[in-house]
Image (cartoon, one colour):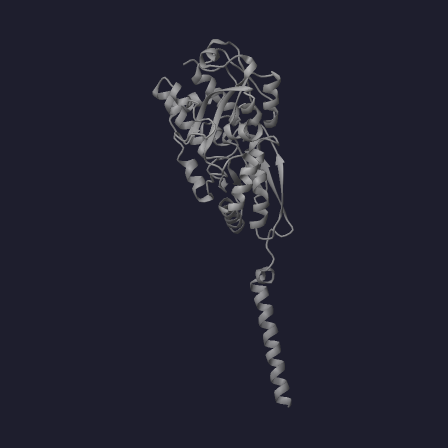
Length: 357
């Protein structure tokens, strides 16, 4: 009996020593069943004001991201408009801790500003980690209010000082408004900024501005009465990708048809390349690989979830056209860099009067 008891004690001691050694050498084993994100809060820094189409796209994604990130963290939005998303991009790149708890969601101005060498860019666009975009197709449309009396291209060109609304200099809708004005040949247009995304439509109808560039999908979802009551006129559209007609606006001419030169046609190629990059979700450089992989997989699952597609359509009146994390960085690296065209695009992004054609 003594020998048997002795053998049991030695075995027990050996097992305890072995387990203790494992936990000392491999401490993560003790916590392997607790996901990093459990009990945490993720902040999505949006480079825009709340309430616009970009915000609606993010809101459609939130419950699915929470579902697919192991640990089901709380996810909140912080809004940081300014500089066409440059302010938010600078913050995520330079100030946010690279711990996987801060995600940027930025407009195309963040990409164009970096590639075109704009001032105020404190980030390297190729060093972010990209988590994809809920859309890679887009239909921008140029609209004027009906009582402005600008019902045709000829009347647009004949008027002087048309007030075109925008959010901020270099923001996506501001750039598109400038592109429309430039290629349509408007006479001394005035660009009125400082509006939040959701404020531009009421400002148009109230007569504070005469025109704006917007998303065709936003018109259908947010302003169906514009169509039903014929409250506005539609003049031109930027198709991304080119040739993809919008079901409600198939008769509206493509803006490139107004180009007069090869340089102007290349300008439209560059605009479409920026738009294909969509609405980037990014992580700052230095984010740990394991957390990056967790988030990449959660975004992939979200983009592919049929229920997400339904929810996205409820929020935006459009079907998502996701750009997956794997392809996102590649898409940005392949944006054309023609110096002459880039210089013209920079002038259109800025606050100075439009260049002559």
